[in-house]
Length: 122
Image (cartoon, rainbow, N blue to C red):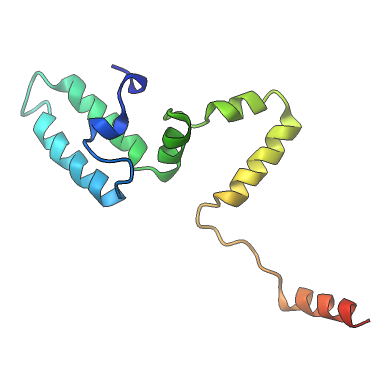
């Protein structure tokens, strides 16, 4: 079965609001239970569990799955925008600012703040 036929949260037997640790714990429990070395007839089930974990354990893939119900790298919205590159660039910039992966954005330096203050005083 493909991922689109199964809810990845149901495959891992977790709730949608489960933490990373809960997802990981459930994955290891199910992986042990359905591992092909222990249960020869469970290869497909084991593969589904691995696919579900690979999506739900990655924040970006999980966000895409929750938003678009797909584990693809790009949701359908970005694919549609690619036809109009200016809108796509603007949207990608918006998303990168909104979901900046823990990178700190440069803040205004003291020099910039001093220049702003001088402009206001005059």
